[in-house]
Length: 465
Image (spheres, rainbow, N blue to C red):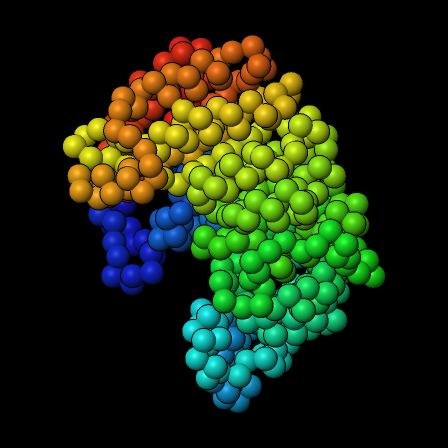
């Protein structure tokens, strides 16, 4: 037994103390297994302050805490000319080169971003096309051997130069990247070859996420590229590429830049297994769609049975109808995960009114066209919010809908999902996005009451967001 009066604990505050009232404390203390410690730390992974304190209290907790604390590193360009060669990340470089550095192996994601790049593009006041600022950091990339995810959000000229610097200075770093997130919002279509070269330089790439939100550049087009359009195959995507995510921040139509990338993937025989499109807006010109198969439709047809997961969030009714009428997915016979979203749902006076046409006709009809022999999971995204009565009527009038019992279309969907067509279905997951303080328990109760048969069979899972 050992006697204590007062114990000091370093927590970043030199005055911090822990008073021990007990006169005696048993020396053999309870020891947690490393597995229990790691589970505990994992539970705190978003609480940076708690992780720091845990790492300082107990040596055995340091490695797992460091794993979360240093998971991601963000690099940004200097706001002005560096003084004495010092950059915002100079201290980070010094730490990486210190002989006692222990966190380098914990870094798994690098973000290279300029928070002001969109403002800069509009104002035309900043000249950051020169990417020399990245070179001092690129020289030390070999210290970060655990990094597998690279996220780049820069002006298009800076992005191209930045990747050239990285791949030329540390080509081995590109080999270890398996997950690439690239914002192409302000890329002109003429830069498509440059981006293809960038994607090509990551030979181990398995997951590619392309983001865009431009409406007024030359990448935005009012038509699909013609069927005789070709792309250069001087460079090819990674043979390991299996997941493609196209993410739009705005409700814009698929720009030329993205269309050319889809053509490149098709002509290079790149067969991915997961395809995701968010805020999908499809051209409203029926003649263009029916007479000239677009790059997305052709790529879906090309993928055939290799496609295992398909996620589509439609922007409007027209996009759903055009996809249903003009996109052939009957050949994608091995789909086992299907995600469908349509971000419109309204609430007033404690009663929810969805876009009835979507749930009564479009969604069931869409699902009836999907190959179901291997479909085990369906994910549906539902948006709910409070709105005043006047706005509710205006929305319904615009969409040419009628106020009526909202339960009926849900029941038809419920019957479809438990029917023989979906015999191997094991999960129906609802992601319920709640706006204007809509109670989570009300959202859960609402969905469960509309799909009672799915709930009874244990298929229904509700996640409120």
